[in-house]
Image (cartoon, rainbow, N blue to C red):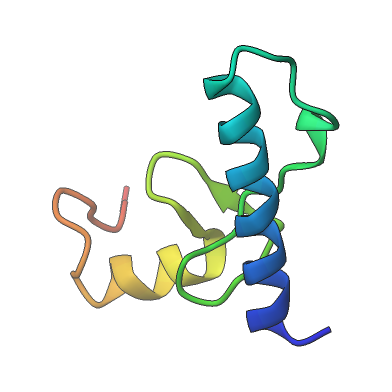
Length: 74
């Protein structure tokens, strides 16, 4: 499957789970929901605080695009 298709599939699953919770019923397979990077769609190495994967985080942090994040040196 292409990355865009995987992202779309995960978004459909998320909507189903949200709809089930709004109706007051227990969602079917809530644990199947995957967090994905919004830039590249990578499912692993996901940083919840930023909503991106570790690779994209490193790129953005080194280029100074994430406010408050600096490279550590000691």
